[in-house]
Length: 307
Ligand code: ADP
Ligand code: FRU
Image (cartoon, rainbow, N blue to C red; front, top):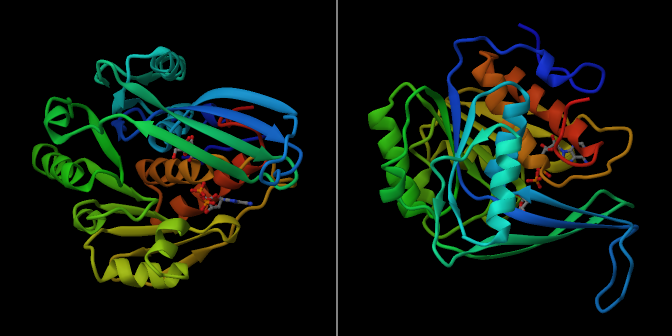
């Protein structure tokens, strides 16, 4: 088995073992309107963008895009409006080889939209997100097929409903690995800590809880969760991980020659952890792989990691 390499050889060339099951992602899809500026403007300034892109975003669908490039069979479940943006989002997911046949369309609903300023000077991304769409609920998730899956990944949102969804996966498909992204600190989010096998936390989540370092976050999660593995991504510092009752391990970031676009770095990182573990890598190697592809992503525009 060879880790998928990017840049000099295409990720898609690293064959995935044929018996690996599919990945189902549960979360949101968004229309991202990205304007690239030379540097981040001040309030009330008027500046001209140097480039613009209109793409499908959203954490879980971003991660699925990467997993699909690495050869995984991917499907997405979430809600969409019935507007033009929904059609655009669906089309892009289909083009990227992601199954959207079980998506819930909300009559009269408006699809989520993000206005994003990307600074060429630093690669920073500033996101203004609008959403006014009901979240996927447990009743809808109960209808979703879990056939042929190896992995279900949840965004840590809508905790009361998500907790029931996680419980369903554990009882109906006990062999399926469940991961949960902890990106934002939401009311009741703690009820989700104990169900998943893998917790994927981020810096913003940690800081919102008052946990100022990766070590503190991992210690706090270890006291609240029986997950087999907790991982935390920490921007340009890289990542840290802890297996249940194991030591905390640090993985430094892999910094590209020039940071041009950090939008979705965390989503790429999460995909890297899932991809590595699905290929049977030990946890530390899976996180090294995740850091490597997230770093490479920061060095290029967009989420196409193939040549
Ligand atoms: P998010 O996109 O959720 O804000 P992070 O900023 O924590 O996510 O980044 C996720 C991962 O991406 C980090 O753990 C790191 O491996 C990689 N990464 C992020 N920013 C950089 C950077 N400037 N240089 C190299 N790697 C980076
Ligand atoms: C990046 C991203 C964007 C989206 C926003 C949603 O991680 O998923 O694609 O607009 O975050 O919060």
